[in-house]
Image (tube, helix red, strand yellow):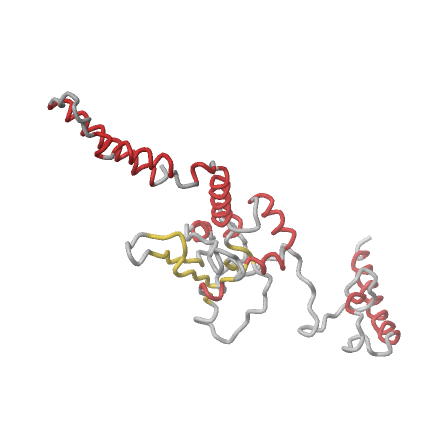
Length: 275
């Protein structure tokens, strides 16, 4: 029958209206007082009456996949080798895939050579234009840009305050793990490390060099005193000089002996260098 849905909706509204007063009486008119810790009950599945959040004193927890303005990940300050380093390599993919084109990047250059370096000198996002779609974080190949949970960004300045620069955008990796622990863990499993890929490569190179140094034979690590002494003795003039009373050397034999002496000297120098 026509009007049945409208009647059901009005009946539900009337029930909530009456139950809100009953709930106030049950709490002794202290339902929204700061001394009454019943926020979980009022926002739970068993709540009755009018559901009101006393914002900003009370805030509803946002989901882990909540998306607001992006931010850049930098290495934690306690990192042994890359403290404060950017994960961003200024590749520009985020700016290319951004639908409203609110991201622009200034790539850094080496002051000595003038060649580009894989880190941003400037990174800007106009949060008034940003539509919080998350494409920049989705397409970033280095996991360097993420979507923040901070939505309280209103201000009276309509110009420069809402253009976030690199200083405002940079937040440590530990911050991302705190606001999105499940997603950070899944990304770590795919990446293979909690750190940036460059930090993992540096650690692997360091461990490989340490293993090669430990596997080097002790004979190669020690100073080869005996071979050096033998080579020096063989290359000495006394060893190559003709014996008294023997047949004098010819000119060809003297040249051969000179080449042999120089070869022995080179061998002695290589042995002294450990090679």
